[in-house]
Image (tube, rainbow, N blue to C red; front, side):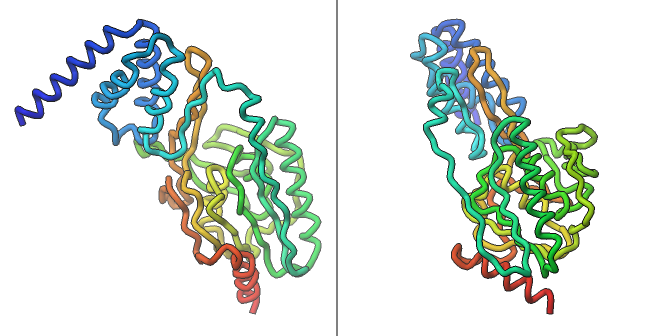
Length: 315
């Protein structure tokens, strides 16, 4: 034990020397960042923060200014091991992001006696969110006038974005009440709720719509389709359908970042999108990694499996 104690003292002494040898603004910036991660990370209770600080300051020992620390900050965020958090330097412009084209998702052709709703990723302004909700609710309403045996909810390719317009758009199919939770590192749970066109975290109103839907489809047979690109907020929707009556999921395991992120701006204008909670379903089982479907099938058989299950349930 003494050997380990002396090793720790040496490392701590080396760290102090490193902190004293780098510019004050660099030291303060690293401290600011590490404090944020220690206070907010969903994995904060699994990390030795003394060792973490020593490691980060050693990595940044040659930094002459804040910008020189950016590779080290990215490294620090990766050490959280949540697979979801990321660092965006202030030097990364919007043009850099816009160079990455978003994938195009198209609807499937299915039998006329089955409803089909694709839930795509949701990225945009408040106005964009309103359009998103309206389009999906219009599709649900148009198909609900038919005699349907069930519904397909297609989440394949949904890599995330804003979960709240997604949830609110499918309120007719998922119903009202508590649909899931955010669970933090201290096992504190905050509920996701839908109540008559309004979405809440606990009692805090997040988003609402004035598009009302008269039919209650929350007990209809419903097959949820997932694949390896169903991620982040897309995974939140998968979690929300857990324990919904007459629902089953089909396809491949999801991407594996079923965690809630919050964006934090650092003192230089850079941001850290930080995973602070795990998604949990209605019975408070926590996720955080890939969500395994009820029926795991090959990708080219996913839609077929969902349709066959709906027909089977109607016999």
